[in-house]
Amino acid sequence: MTLLLSLLFFGLVDRLYTAQVKPQIANRLLITNNPTLTTIALEKPFCVFGSDSCSSCDVYLYGVDVASSNLVVVDDNSVPLNSTFQKTNGGRLAPYKVASFGLPNCKSPAFDSAQDLAQIANILDKYLVRIGDNVTCLTDPNYLGICNSPLSEGTSYRFRYILVNSTGKMADQTLWSDSITTRAVKDMSRIDTWPGRRSGGMIVIASILSVLVFFLLVAFAAAVLTSMMGESTSDANTATYESRISQQASSETYSGVLRGSSLERERYVPKPQA
Amino acid sequence: MAGKGSSGVAGLIIFGNIIILMAGLALFAETIWATTDPYKVYPILGVTGKDDVFAGGWIAIFCGFCFFLLGIYGIVAAIRGSQTMVMVYLILMLIVYIFECASCITSFTHRDYMVNSNIILKQMLTYYTDTSTAQGKELTRVWNRIMLEKNCCGISGPKDWVAYTSTFRGQFSEEKAPWPFLCCKRDSNFVIMSEDGCRVGHTDYINTQGCFDHIGHAINSYTWGISWFGFAILMWTLLVMLLTMYYYTTL
Image 1 (cartoon, rainbow over the protein chains, first blue to last red):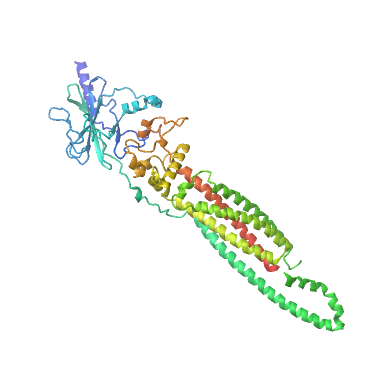
Image 2 (cartoon, rainbow over the protein chains, first blue to last red):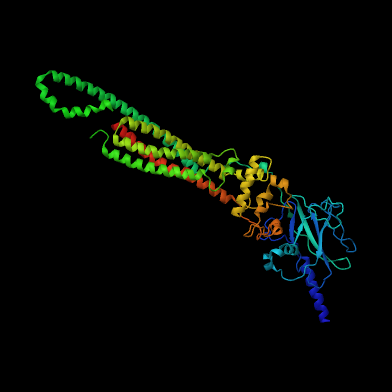
């Protein structure tokens, strides 16, 4: 009796626990590009449905556009609906069946072997379910399985796992997930290529160099002018000096003085040559 | 000599010109290094229709060599104390000075244009895998090489390829190849480690860092060599020229 009670109790706890679980999007640190434009990677429901006891059970994944008001995934007899992507207009009208897979067992994921190259595809397949993975099934007339065709971009979806037992009836289910929005693509022609604010270095170089060139030109002009004015005044000096020399040369009294100022004359002679 | 170009000023000018000629030679060598483009990013700049960073480099090659020659000439002119020679020196130096200013400003402005905007991203999306144009082929080669050699992906990471429409996306659907497989991590033989892991973006199998660091570093290296070194030389040359102008008035 106690055994029966405890089983019931644990079963209830189990049920309560399951009822609060939502499907989770795959860890973004592991899978960098998620969600993409047309795909969403979800973690598979590990240990969510209790135990490994239900070995022949399957898990169905249903997805629905958040705009849909119809969220029914099972009929009155708890038999899961066989709604497809095409019939529900890509989940806009009602939930559609995205995928089905065996109930994952409850072992701790062996992430160490994720380094093994031969196993990576297998491991990803084991732990993740990628919605929107099948590009061709919509257009392939011979395709009979569940069509997991690409989602619409920039659209929000919700997902729910349900556990189906061997009699084909729903045994358990998770909550609907939080809404997950596929990425919207931006048009490359609308990328703004305006560089915005100029960098400090460019302003410093451009402004300082412009000002310096201006100063240099002004200084050059000033140097030339000064030099020309200096030249003309010294020319005038030379002329007066020479006329004075001729005056003095004519006067024999000052001839001695003239010889004495020969040093001074040397100072003026190279000037006109330069 | 008193009053006519004092030997002290001439000595300073000679010293200044020795610095100018050495710095000019260094600028010459440095800008040859920049224009030979050891990082091989020229096509990324060239495809935008402007290559002003390199144009600045080519002007600076000319200016560097001119500074070298004019430095020697300036020393001779200062020793001879000839007014005509100093005048010729000043005029030539002014011309080279203005050219070198143009080189510095052009180079740095274009660096801003490339590095501070999204233009490299846009051109990558536009031209990568575009085989119909010459620019497309050239840029595809450049990007393939950079991504393979530098183990990087896109400008800021693999997300660039999925966030925007692109020529690449027009050719490959997102389910098959969300990004070029050159973004995938490779072993030492350049074989992709795991195509599936790379396709879903598993961080162990994809290079998550972008290539902008590499490209930005290359452009910045060239520009700082051309612009800032040129700027420093111009600062020094300014002082020497002002001194030479003063010297000229005393001759």
